[in-house]
Image (cartoon, rainbow, N blue to C red; front, side):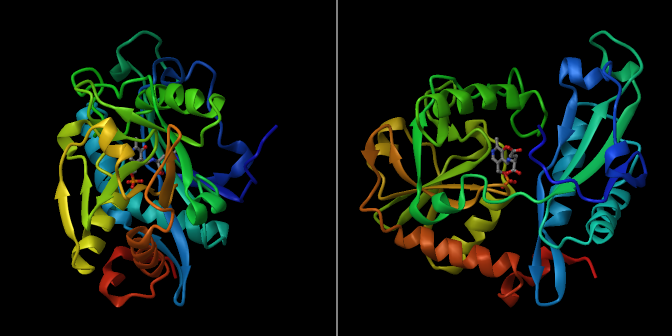
Length: 307
Ligand code: PPE
């Protein structure tokens, strides 16, 4: 059963191919050993037609992930940027989630990925609110995972590698099977790190904080946007570690991510968060919505118009 609705085209190894033909062999190296780096990007409708949100930043992170993993991508940042834009245009759907992936292809088996050809594909599909439209409105129920976020000495979290998501999947499945919407992972030091696919912000008495990059997180691009929004809202912001109990005592908690957008957390392990009105989250959501849809000129440079 396929949940994704097929669009027309997928960019694969340098050209746009028909959706059903964008296939790989079962002995694709990355399928066995997780040697794949990827991105998650969104395009949105604006008054000037579809626009991709923070495309250069996403491509830059993709190139950096490749660098960490010594992956020799056969395309430049410029080529991949153009490929994303071409793909959105070719599919004719303005609001899509864009997934570039670089991976070790069909060639050799065994652990050294440099012996296999590196392939790059970019797919796009329609993806609604990651934690549900109701979650964006009413907040989601989170649980602190028994799984610890992998440490950068074993898997560097700032490189968006497919392998990291085995750790995320364990946390996600545990949360869902326990009746929660989403997990919060602590790092090896016991401090709050991030969600399986989201960064996290904490609001306490008009001070907003988020764990620093050194806490072992993906440096989220939505996180970066929210940090800018906080400055523009004149709010006090700090990058600082916080503990599990500081989750419970927060006035507001927020998940941020390309897939998740800006989503409030209404409960952590049975403790309600704040009073359920999320005043600061609402201000950030408003700025985010205006930014992605091109309604705030202050963030116009974050949009790549597809034309
Ligand atoms: N942390 C992790 C671990 C993560 O995967 C994401 C994105 C973020 C933080 C937020 O980063 P950014 O999107 O740049 O703000 N997770 C992507 C994948 C989700 C998926 O399930 O697939 C995403 O949101 O696109």
